[in-house]
Image (cartoon, rainbow, N blue to C red):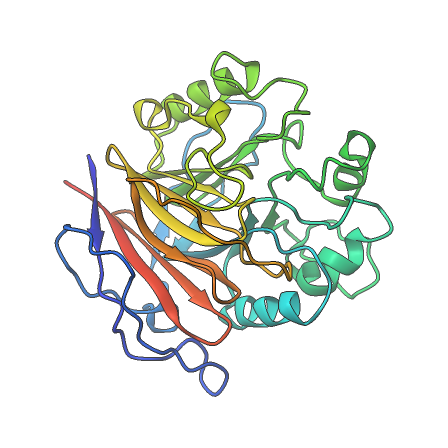
Length: 331
């Protein structure tokens, strides 16, 4: 059983020495969970253990791997628009040197075109992209960049530039990635997904089977369209699948260019859509599940996991920790 333990956000500053100054920030909501201090990303202890790879049971998976603990990764969304805002987010992420980067979609504005994808993605993240063939330098020997498809990525016919640019597992639209104690389940939430996006779809059946077959301590579902959102686009009702029942520990999405954390019947939902597209959205009427809402600056979600805890921090390009919470295994 997992439970959500919220950590205070008045942690001492330190993301990258000499690069960022982390300012303490209180979350705009007042969750009732027990408080517990958690160090910011730059203060995470050096890896000292090796995790047993999580099992995967579908042919949409990447090979499993043994890795040092803790595993540190970043989730960002709605970022793929070359310019100073995306560059600032990328500089912050790369300075942290995460093990891998995952996205919640809209990787390549405005129309998912082949002519723009290297400028929008490879220019900033080529060192994490496996089999990189772009113009911005060396890629990664092992792919460490795992994107979700967004609606802007699907504007190009059949999203073909996306598939030609990235080398991803399985059908490359929805797939899972096991990295030590964490397993990501990347979902294609766009209506153009050939295998559907409803609860009775082939894709949902794949997710249920993959989640139920997984023995990973941490199972996170990523997609573009948020099942619950208090912001401009609002909730995507077709994506309200039975994530908790199937075994997911959190659902991470984008599409709305804001940061929001919600608790829906004990399951954490996060919208992280401030990855660098210049237009930031506004909130409408907050959903009753909403705990934290933020739209004032660009940033990304920094995640640190081991076999018993998963800490999440949304950090802005100015070094503010907007949200800090920890999921913990109850042994």
